[in-house]
Length: 382
Image (tube, rainbow, N blue to C red; front, side, top):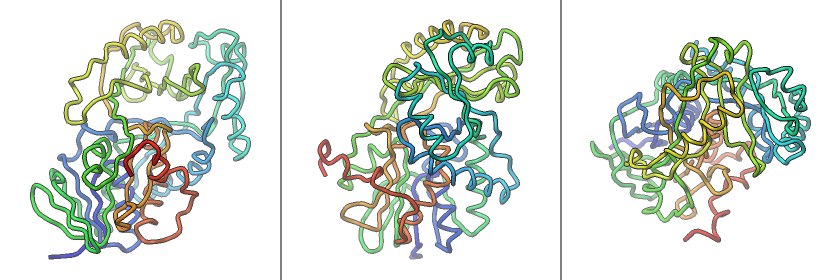
């Protein structure tokens, strides 16, 4: 039986980026996906994602985003695909809170162009918003929109073009660790010197049999599109991507200009009901819609009060909202990428690079202490 240098399970954005990085480094690589591609059952589908340098409480992501932007541009050039459009990003929160101050500090530290706005300046610049005087805004000039489906397809096309093998509609059944790892699917068995598990919300099912018990929560996100009362009000030429802060010093609402559907603005809650990824439609998310309708009524007066399209996505959250990028503690040739917590897509070029470095026994390009499995030791069975 053929032995691959690397097998990657999960062809979402993180797994596809990892496989792309491996094959570009001369690794004979197999990429496995349980569903027929393209599909909308995980976390990487859809047309758009927010991208930004602004991170108020974790400036190591700001540092990683510097390289991510360069790598997105490289992928655009390689694939001949437009993946990113620059719109800027507006972050709104309570004046003086940790989210605003931390974001300003991170952007200043990393020399990212930005503008701060008090409540009055915010209303003048963005009259389509309704906020009181006790808020502040930060314009991250680097922010914009990633075209998610195009980005995912570009990674997969380039992976195949460079000799990678992609098999979809093939679900994982079992993993047999060892110096050579055997991966059993519903259609066959494969052997590899290394295994990368980038299985998204299914990490809650795939990892425990391997002795990894991460405190992951899988959430179903409702993706709402709201009709503009006046077409073009929230278009990309007038309004940036958007993050709305909350009392906890983080953001809980995100929005994107009306790019996907003419006259429809994408505005969503950054949370949702906890689910089983194989039974995601069982959960009641009425409270999400109620909360977002109230938010629109208070802060987006030029949107109609009810969404006209609702789609779904899945987040896999860690308690600290940092990723898991690490080796298995017992089997060092099994690498795990998990818990991307609703903000991993834009960082996927760097995530794929780092996971590939772990596979190839190279020194990772970044400080990995934030992403270690053992940070959860106090609350896990490891």
